[in-house]
Length: 179
Image 1 (cartoon, rainbow, N blue to C red):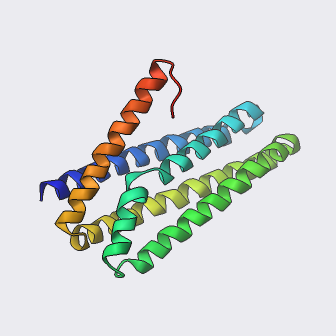
Image 2: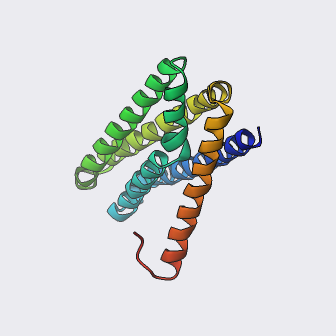
């Protein structure tokens, strides 16, 4: 029971961090839109880079790596929700690809294209927000269908994952290359 509680708290913290990062991204995009006349390619490229980094973070979260596979193994009850999450992820990837591809031309073609690019970035954020909301439903299902033994294994994986992240951060701070 404690491992289930630990795992759900870890997932909740991860969700809170993802929502906070998403909120910061939205603010960055809003700032770009509000200052269209003053937009410079470097600021837009920075916003797109932040979206790309956030997208990578989303795919490296514990829910993606451990919980979704455990749910797939435990039940078919969540298949439609998992399909919805997959659709949202695929849409996000496509929007992000389009944003990256359109970045250079937006800067060359001016304010209208920049506004369109910012609108696409906002659409990406909205899509990810919808995914985070749907993941909350997934956690409720996970709590019911994943066995205590599986939660124990997931909790162990979480601890191992966190230790690896901490190790990488220490290596970066001390100037060592990460493996």
